[in-house]
Length: 263
Length: 240
Image (cartoon, rainbow over all chains, first blue to last red; front, side, top):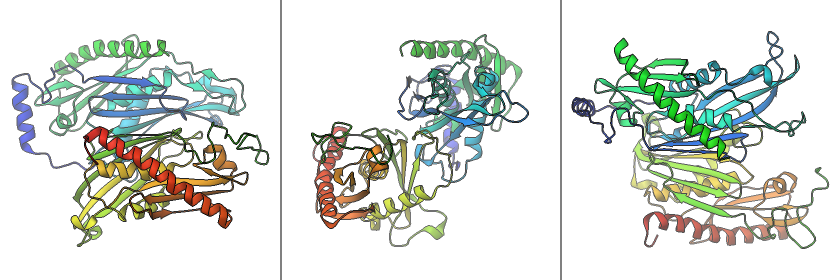
């Protein structure tokens, strides 16, 4: 992504707002933007989800392929998450091979899902040593107005939890719902004007400093962490956002589960 | 269902998806679906879904790509990995590059590029869900997105395709008709003058069949144009 020229005025005004506990769009410090989430919205994907957070819009599509298990793990299938941030989603994203930013996005989301153990790769095996399912989650950005990490992670887990294994099409039995144990949820905090805020928008990202991504599982266990961009933070700051993440992740998990029940 | 015995039409002249020979799939267009873009549109065309975004006019860089007398159009066409039955691996793709180029050639014929010397206008077309005829969806969506961005144009390009399956000339082939069919003729038409700015064809058509495809396309272009205008009117009101 081409980093646009950041007006020092933006940094200054963000710092000024922080001193009076304000945010650029009127939200409180740990308040998220308006959330819309829809599953089963892509006809050619086996699982899909569209997430809108403010003006950030993303899609996730789950596809299945047959693979030969790796020789050292003959009884396991595969799980892959890939983020493709195409230049359609914003003025500063450029065409070309995957940028560092989009690779980081994909990998951080991937770790949260993989390490939570919600997909048992052994269950993806069809014939040991010969045939197994590879599950691929493709993340696709439509509109980038900041915090694509949380949008991607939420879309990914909701698409995965509502995916159907297309066994009939591949002639290996009947279609069935992909078993997913657990609902890992990511919450991201950006340092803006010297303090951490939840769900930063694009202007807060541009005029802010480092960011921290926390993925929590069903029991409140930590499954992935990532600190991104330039900046320092203290243990006290981290404790505070971890507390915030615990309650926010539980709320979001509830939303995903309600969505599944409505299907 | 093999290649040889696919029947696109029943005894009453009705196609598998319920259409008559000269009927199009339903088309639905919405403007302004990408909040951060300068112009955008989403088109649903049967099971096809495409989105188009326009960014600019902006500075063209590096400088060697600048044109001193006009703007350049930077057009990209891409299919999302989950848009088809078999996943598409992201990355370089000759088909996408060619479609991007012919789309640019079509749009450059109508955009008033001389108004913006040394600039670039980015047009991004993304196919979200594919069911045959995605290039027509993309070009049509891009035209609406350009209009939504307020870029001056002499007309909007409307792209439609007719073809042939089982020896019958059909408007707007769907997936099986395209797979098992004998020909496809996508065109880009300017509805105000009926001029052509985009033309491709592959397959086998007699001169009579070709004429029939052409006539179907011109008529369909006017129908789709009305839907494009309506989408813009819904967003902006008044006369478009």
